[in-house]
Length: 261
Image 1: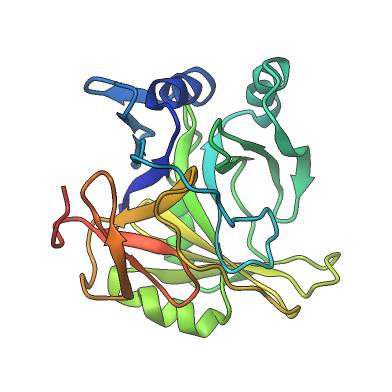
Image 2: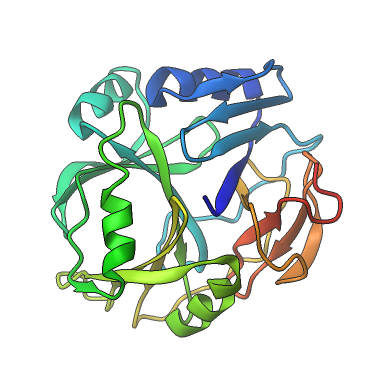
């Protein structure tokens, strides 16, 4: 497991914890308060934290904005899990549909605006770079409850981001084409342990977003290993993690690094 935690800034940790336990089968680790909750999602943890002050976010649901795009979960049945979300009035970005690679997917938002994805079925890559890595991914099987699978990132350059995260243990296992997207869209899958960095690349021009540490929604990832001094220091997370940002604006910390709680 290379991604140990997903950090999410929230307005109310209790409310967000209830959302994840009710709709994603997450399980609480320890006590929950209005300020903090930690949840088990099988292959990683969600750390929900309320910053002292929440600022307006500049994140937009546009895949052409470099950096974080969404958090993905493998599930046994997308439609069955999407139904109660719909009934509860949860906002969807993309209704359930069949996607490239032989999977069924849906996109929706958590209470603080983090974009989440459900993925059903083993991904059939158009190009396989690492057969052993693909088999290891498929070998995780169908989860009984939603299992953290990946964080998606739009990158300026595939080779650059692959080299950047190789020291963290990531290697490209496969590629999916998006032939119907006029923006020249492709997806590559950098895998380490039980987690994936799902890398979006485009021929179209992309925008850059400066890191923000105190906005609602996704705040960063915590890797269980890697070069602590990688990236550029951007400040301390409310939960005590020393956060850094890579060249695409993805915010991260390394477990056991300076100031990490």
